[in-house]
Every structure is written in structure tokens, then in C-alpha cells.
Length: 112
Length: 116
Image 1 (cartoon, each protein chain N blue to C red):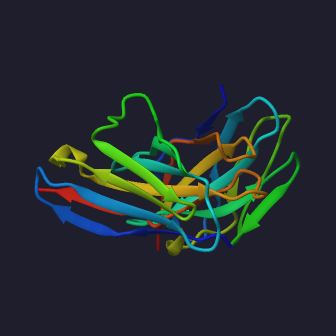
Image 2 (tube, chains in turn red, cyan):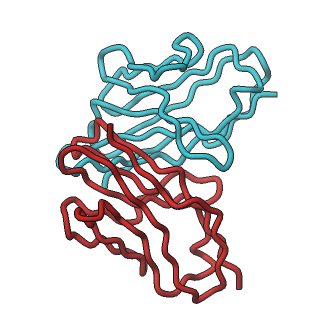
């Protein structure tokens, strides 16, 4: 079945460091891919998404490219800030939303 | 964008009582909503799929009689934790999809349940 494998955390970075959180997926068909962010005590917010191969999702300095050849959707940010400290979830959907799969989440802490 | 709202955000109750959590789609109609449970430092666990006008579909291992789900309208689903016990303490999150959104799910703010 479909699944998402996400880099284990926790990740601790200094402010302005480069961030990469790896995410690979297994899917039949042509899924949509997402990164959600969860700040402490809150629900999930969509960070970015890509709905077809080679699409690049971007938001708030974060980027991820839908790579079909490597079945990956790695999250990157060139310069992290303390306010980026949160848990990041990679997710996959069958495009209807009826089948939705989360990665295990990666906790990011950015220190000043 | 599509907005999903949960209420209450925090609830504390005594063991043996029942607690109801509401999930509303504020600006769209949702025939299907999803209820998740999240333990500390863990990912989301799908509990059940709530279908408007019909019975919810529960995931394996989730007690139907413990977690009652009702989806009485296209904008409201409720999760009732019956005869709550301390082990039911958790963070509960609902979500809904929107036609044409390529499978994106929109999440509520979450509800923190603490059972004393």
C-alpha cells in the first residue's frame, strides 16, 4: 500500500543554518504530496504542497520538489529561524483525500 | 481557504464522564471528516472516518462504543468520548477534505482532553 517514510528526528540547528528533512514515498498512481507543520499545542497547518511530478511547493522560505524518479519530496530551507521550531509532517494523498498517509513527523528545534 | 474549527480547545473532565468535541467546516461543506488522535511526540493516528448521514468507519483497534462519532450535517461532526478514563487523555484533531483540492486535508486546531 501507499506509505510515507520521513527522516527521524529530533533535529537541532542553529539559527540561519540550512535545513533538509528527507521524505520518500511509496504510492500507486499519482499522489499529491504535502508538508504540514505543527507548532506546540496546535493543530496542523499546510506548509506547502505539490500535486504532480516536478512541481515545486514553496512557502515562508521552505521548498520541496516532487521527484517521481526518486519518489521523494524533501523539505528544505536555506536559513532557519527560531520561529521555525515545530514538528514537520510529510504526507501523501490519493488526490481525493479519501486515502491520506502521514510520515512519523520530524521535530525541529532552532537555537539562537 | 477552507477553514475547519474545533471546540473546545481544552477540556478537563472527571473519570467516568463523557466529553463531546465538535468539528465544524466553516466555509465549505464536508461530506467526509476524519478524526485523529495524537500522543505526545508521535504522529497522528487515524481513528475513524465520519460520513455525513451514515455511520462512521472506524479503524482497527478503535472502540466504537468508546468513541462515538456523529456527522449530522454537512458542516458538523462530533466525537464523544464516553465514560472517559485517564488513558483517553490525548490530543484529538479533526480534518476535512474539499473537492478539487487535490486531496489536501484541512485540519482543526485540535482539542486537548485531560481526564482526571
